[in-house]
Amino acid sequence: MISMAGDSAQDLTVVAARARLLSSVSPVSGVERQPLAQGLGRVLAVPVMAPFALPRENHSALDGYALCGVDAEAGRRLRIAGRALAGAPWSGTVSPGCCARIMTGAVLPAGADTVIAQESVQAEPDWITLGSSLAAGANVRLAGEDLPAGAEALAAGCRIDARHIALLVALGQTEVSVVRPVRVGLLSTGSELRPPGAALAPGDLYDSNRPMLAALLRQASVSLQDLGAVPDDPAQLSERLADAAALDLLVVSGGVSVGEADWVRPVLAEHGQLDFWRVAIKPGRPLAFGRVGGCWFMGLPGNPVSAYVTYRLFVEPVLQRLSGLSVREPVVLSAPLCAQARHRPGRTSFLRGRWERYGPQGWGVAPLAAQGSAMLAGLAEADCLIELAADQAVFEPGTSVRVWRLSEG
Image (cartoon, rainbow, N blue to C red; front, side):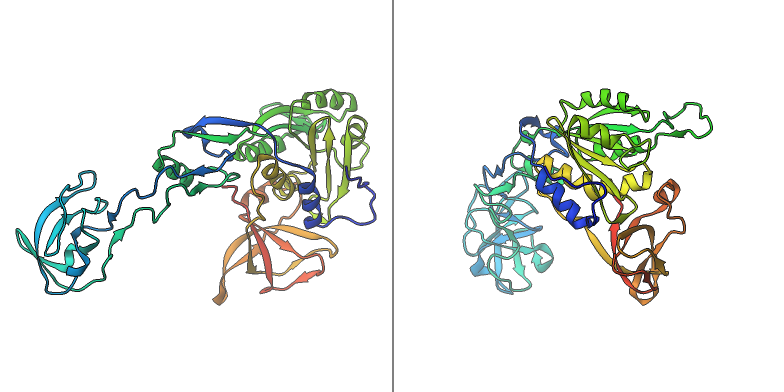
């Protein structure tokens, strides 16, 4: 277990913090066999091999006439010997001097290796005349050109989405082997927190972090256990940690700094193994990571924007690793700033921003005016995070910056 004290001389960079997290956790064990419809969003546990080729036979790629390649010359006159439809193949054989009427998706008749489009012929009741020449094999979907029989159709470690469902069905699959879902507990801390709908006394706040984080976790297809909220009381926090015994990961928002009411750090140090480090970012500097028994623990800041940003930067890759996914770096674009941006150098800042039309380059990003770590309206308005590098204080309009998209889809 890595020991990183909260008063470490140097904060970790985002890259270093992510690397430490990913080097610590490993995928959960356990495989489930699920009906295909229940596999959406789950992680494939074993490779899926193609039991047959896709397509299984040679098919026509368009409506036209199937013929022999030796006859594919302009002016050639061919007798129509049969008719092939999708789902109704023609059992005859196409020989030189003949052709068969064929529709898109129909199995190519025996003897034929080429299809000419119906727009490229002069058609009579029983004959056609080719209006142009074409290469042998034209307009044919060859058996196995999409996927050969016995080939790996899907690799283990992919998260199943609608595209994968379509491929699995095309291969005749009705069930799929998936990694069991990661069991995640979610807990908020703070004496000021109240559930939605409750009356608010002066100083009270509705607990917005827990529903926000729960929504993000459900998008990751975890098995979520909502542990509610606890006040800033070490005894109650200790009791709630007992609920983490059967979990793979416990996510806590609030209480991870070093204030008088921040009890997460000392309670976890007492009941488990705790790494506590500061990350050189804004928002979201404090981050706690460790273990409580067999359960991993991640403590996020209590300010909602900080909680959101640290979830996207740090919890998401941990969940990917626990789920057995191949961890991929997030999609980060480059775009010019539409307006000047400033921050304190020495740490990486993530500003809430929006895409806007910008000069001849087409699109740029503009930081929102409100950047406080407790400002939810600005987070809801933003459609991107603008990354400001740690080695620079002022970023003039037109400066190229890294841009993180905010869509969780």
